[in-house]
Length: 122
Image (cartoon, rainbow, N blue to C red; front, side, top):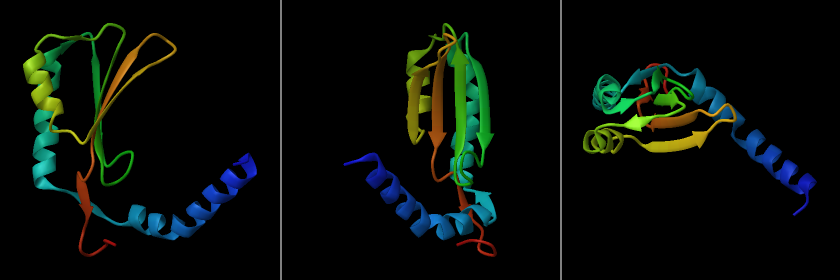
């Protein structure tokens, strides 16, 4: 498959779905209480399980229905593996990557964190 064909297929896919995506992203969202509780519990306790990591988080990002916790550091050490595993098992997705500056990044994502409200939903 040539690059032009891939580009055309991708453009067709985007054009076919962009209105639905715009509508979804413009809707008002509210956190699902159970997901919010899991997110807060993990955020409150993840720092106790690791050393050498900067912990950041966000809600309604990168999409309105998601939340995330990110651990970043050069030498991240997991000091309580049992508790760490129990915390990250509650996540939807976990990704580990290495940055060119030498940092390790652990992204913990929570899909279905929020849902559209009935008055502005899709």
